[in-house]
Length: 488
Image (tube, rainbow, N blue to C red; front, top):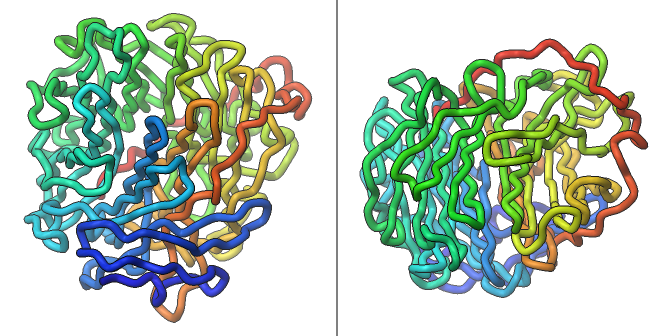
C-alpha cells in the first residue's frame, strides 16, 4: 500500500489511497488546493527512493482523452543526467471527476524491468482495438529504446512494454487513427529521432494495437530534428510537425497509412527568446487537428516583440496538408508586457472545426522575463477560444508562483518538462496535467502532477492579438537556432 500522506504539500488536504500493488491503481478520492484562480487536485506522486534520482519529483506530462476517459503519463523521480526512476500514469474514467494512478511495469529496474532510466512519455488511444498506449524511452547508457506499454482495461492496468525501436533514440511520440471512416482506421504511428544519425526522423506503424511495429521509415529529403508530434486527419492522412535543427518548424506526412512518408515542408521560421534562470526549455511544437483536418501548431516565439525580449505563444494553422498560414499570436497579454510565455500544451476539441473550433491552451510563464535563477517566478496559465483562435478568453493562472530552486535540476537546466499537454473533452472542459512545485523540505523536493478540479471551461472571449498590443504585421526578430534537448 502506498499512501500520499507523507509527500502531500501543506496546502493540500489529505488524499485517501486504496490498497493496491505499486504497478496497479491508487484511487485519489480527495486532495485539492487553490492556486490563484482555480482549484487543482494532485493525481500522482513519486514513490521511489533510488539514489540516482531527485525525489519527490514528477516532470513532463502528456495527456489524451477519448470519450469520458483521460489518460496521462509522465516521468517519476527525475535523474540529473537523463530520464527518471520510472514512468507514472494517472487515469480518469469519469471525465476528470476522479483519478487513479500507478507506475508502468517492466521498464526500469524499479518496475521489474532492465533499463536504468525512463523518459519522454506520450499517450494515445486505439479505438479500433480498444487499447490505450503509452510510448516511452528506456535508457541504458548510450542505448535508448522506444517502448510501447498497452492497457486493454481503460488505462487502469498496463502490460510490460513492447520494444518499438532499438538504438540511440530520442523524443518519441505516438498517435492512432480513431476515425471509423478512415481507410487506415486502427493504425497507430510512432515517431522518434535517431541521435546517432544527427537526429534523423523515423516513423513506424502498428496495425494491431501496438503489439507489433513495422519497419523504421524516414521521410523524404532532409529531415533532421526533434519533438515531432504526429496528428491524424479525418481522411487518414498523418501530418508530423517538428522542430528542425535549422531553427524552423517543419512538417511531413503520409497519405498511404504509413507505407511511406513524404518530404518535409516549411511551417514557419522560429524566433525564440532563451528564457532566463537556466530553465530547461525549447520551442518544441504542440500540435492538434480539428474535425475538418485543419492542423494547429503552437510554440514559443518572440517575433511579435521588438528586440525579442520575451516569447509569446504563437499558432500556425494548416491551409492544406502541405501549406501553412502565417503564425498568429495568442493574446495572453500585450506585447509591451514583461511576461515570458513558453512550453505550450495545445488542445483542440476534435468534434469541432473551423470557425467553431474549441481550443484550450496551457502554458508556463515568467511574469517578469528579465530575472535570474534566484529571482525568476514560474507560473502556469490557461486561455481558450471557441472560434478557431480568432479571439480568446482572458488568461487564467492555474498555479504558481514557483521558485526555480524548487524544481529538479538536469544537465540541461531546471525542469518541469520539455513539453506539456492539454486535452479537451468533446463539447466539454479542458484537462491539462501540470507539474506543480512547492517549497522543498530540506533537500527533498515537492513536485507532483496536478489536474484542475472539474476541468477548465473553454469559454472563448473577445481578446484578439490586435487588441492586446500586437502590430498588424509582426516585428520579426532574428531567427535563432535552438539548442536541441535530449532524453539526457
